[in-house]
Length: 121
Length: 106
Image 1 (cartoon, chains in turn purple, yellow):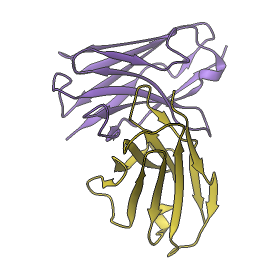
Image 2 (cartoon, chains in turn red, cyan):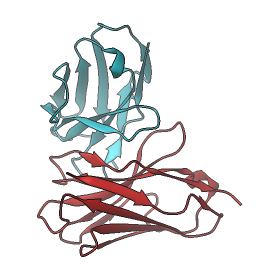
Image 3 (cartoon, chains in turn orange, yellow):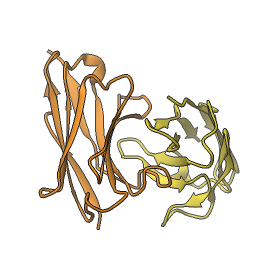
Image 4 (tube, rainbow over the protein chains, first blue to last red):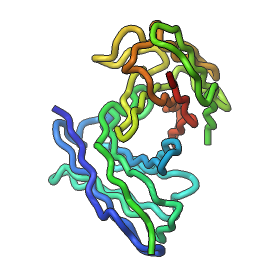
């Protein structure tokens, strides 16, 4: 079965760099159409898409955050890594990774459980 | 970026009610519109993809319709487990964007 799991620090200080890892199973990121995304949700607020990496290594980023984000994959480990630089308290959120099987015609069909990241000194 | 606007932001309903949530896109997105349900402390769950296709395992009381800029999620007979927040999301073009959510309360 398909599973995704986020891992990373629960607490980061302002100006630090956040590194999150999504470890998945039940599918391959080498399969045509397959993509892994990062999405976040500040407490009590709406979902915000951050980044996506595709089976062919194409990468896409949030317009407002693209200067701070880097996404990469390690297909041998079934992992996708997101880094976000210059963290600020407004970046406090639950961070999810989620899969899509086609960039346009499918929704995010499997999600990790999310990891809460708090930015505070 | 394509802006997604949901209405209402919240609604109160009773079990057995028919509930309709609307989502409007800032430009035409064809039928590339998805709906999610989120309960407190949980990850969102995909309900509807491509405007009207029911995700596997989702009860048939959920349905979606629309194309272009205007879309609707309908719950035909609200069940106690349906009280949650619902989000629309466009997948027409990157970056994908979400609506602000509609909270369905008792």
